[in-house]
Length: 259
Image (cartoon, rainbow, N blue to C red; front, top):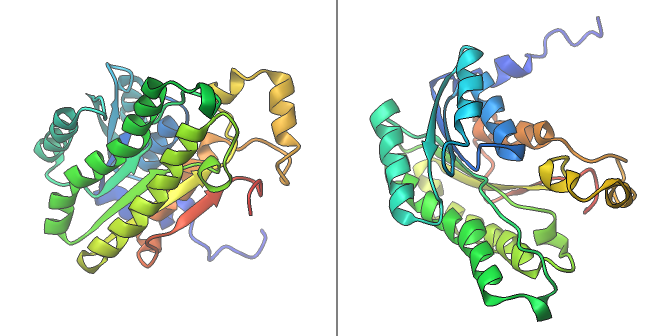
């Protein structure tokens, strides 16, 4: 034994999520899937949202492990569907404690060649939907006088990246939005934070090919790509009572790629 037996396990430290209800957008794969599984393992009732029936797989996985999960078909760019997502959550569980804004897309192109439609699509999904989803959960959270709103940003929003002007703009805008909202709702016990991942080993990065992935690793002091679970751990912390005094913060999970 190492002598640290007094330290609680991760499950014990996050056991306060057992009575919480968490909504995760873009929950079907990658970071969103990892977050949904982590929150479910910590005892939260998870609402896994994604387009079509794509989130049913992760919801089923949570249920098979003994947790509670509901999957919903939601297009986060549609305000009516987002409102329906929150209504369904309240109908099923009676409350909403955590919102994880994870849904996002890329439409990469150099700015001079970027079409207005590619700009608009990324803004609508990655930024406007963060406002729409956050606004939708505010009323129940304000009534509860408690809540956690956590948005998944990106290292690209902090340092920029050629060919991703639209994506970088949304992730930087997410930070400003979250800081403003954090000031608006802090007095009601609601915290608002951003987790900014670096290069994470997901389907998106897998499509880049081995040479491109190897080149990315050379930019990361810790010498590896991150995993969805690395990001999920940070989000699980911000969702827990241990993070009750943290708001308006950007938590970087990037292996030292940006300091």
